[in-house]
Length: 438
Image (cartoon, rainbow, N blue to C red; front, side):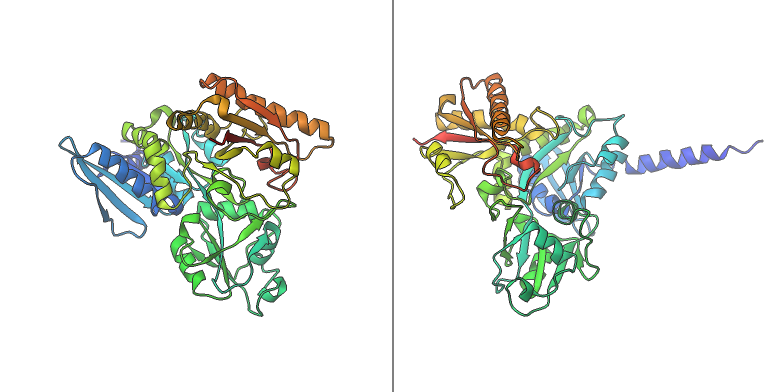
């Protein structure tokens, strides 16, 4: 009898691996990925969702593996079990692609190379697959005794590349700088590398690397020479620095600057699913996370909720008098409308923010006539061109709000003034939402 060809054994091994990784194992749902999302936020969202379904309060138990836990509850006589494994954003993509995870938790957007790998099964960049569950500010942390209060993105890059090695070079104490960074599997690291280091600055080999945001922050808070970065929910006992980008003013991450994504190191936290292949339990959990109750848990966890609130901004000296007059009878909502890169189409978050603004007005007993949209453009060669672009952006949002049932919203453009990032930064092209004072 002839031996089966080598390809036969390869196929058998592939099928066996697929069966072993199948979600039809011990848990009804598995969530894999980011430590930023999985350490606290994802378990809180799972518990909140299970509590709505269940006959009793959800329970949590460790798996024996670090940064993993199982949450379970009884619902209609059936025990539901959800595994949350937080080993880094890249690990989440691999388990989603393999079919093991129903949800990939990520603290960075899907990479084009990752989206290409599963394009035959789902479009991970589409609205039905990409879900922004929270906004986070990448926090730059130092010891509480450090006299430095703000740094530019470029200076932070120089520090982490080892080009600046003593705090005295920045006006601080004569003390060597110690570097604390997340590990290579972390979406927090990917975000820091993209927003701060770029292709210009390599990470200095002396940097200590961490899987956990909380542990990194705790170690920085005990080291007078330390500097590190983490998610906003992990500041703990460290000191938080303000950050500047280009000629824009330095901003500290707070409710308004992070929710609006004006803060230079703001980032979106994601849950990705496989489009129409998403398991029902995973789809229901996503809807809960994106809704009002889920976003309230986001705020409780220490991240920034996407539920809009009205805030009276504290203007600094850089804000022009004309803008002060334009907004003097308004408060700003903690939402900016942004556009997909290279497109005039609103991005996935903005599509959902349309309904969030509508629900906010309904809850507050307000109408569309109370709103004012102010569009902004990135730096242009001519002031008139910048004004036209900013007005067109605001008009695009006005049309989208009209389609969502909010007609006749007032709008204007403010050209390329009041940038929130350096020249060429996509964050400068935005539409702010303001609401009349009562």
